[in-house]
Length: 216
Figure 1 (cartoon, rainbow, N blue to C red):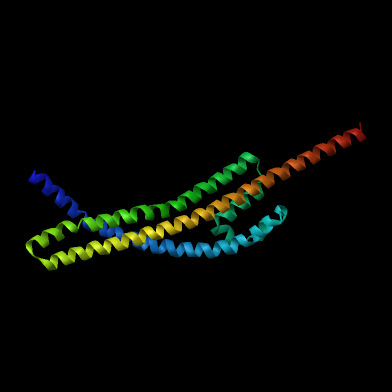
Figure 2: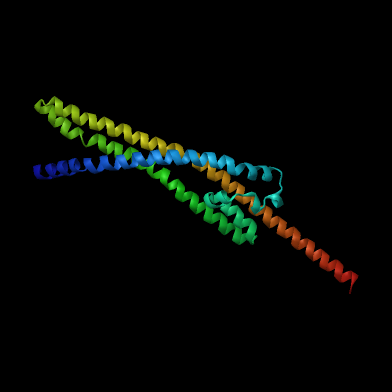
């Protein structure tokens, strides 16, 4: 029994360094994600202003490709999808495929925030519990300095893990609202394109019938 418990103890203690390294890596990733999300927020307000204006006025025809700058076309996935929908003017199945592709891109982006929101607190908890064993051993033998050092590691990993989880949760909630709004915009554009094509087809058929009646 002692062999098993000692093995478990050394295994769990050996995980402390990998856990701390992962926490540091996720901490840097959380900082980068927070900065990129803020930049995405700025670009989103700038890029979507004209789109929202046209959609509010129900002037889909005026939402032309020329309204988007070259930078928007290269960096903004929503703008790229709208351009493809306008240029290709596909049937409903083709438009749904473009919307589905954008949804996959959105889910991939949300995966970064989900990873941080879940793994951050988990790694923080592991970093808290692992040093508690050596701290209790140090307390039993009266080594206060070693106990304080282990407790310091335990508290630090807890704070870092919670910080990572908070960044992941905040960005996840924010981006979910963004992409829900984008999906609503794309659905509206797809419905408008489909409705416009139906009207054009109906107008063409009426014109052909009228021509056939006038020139039998």
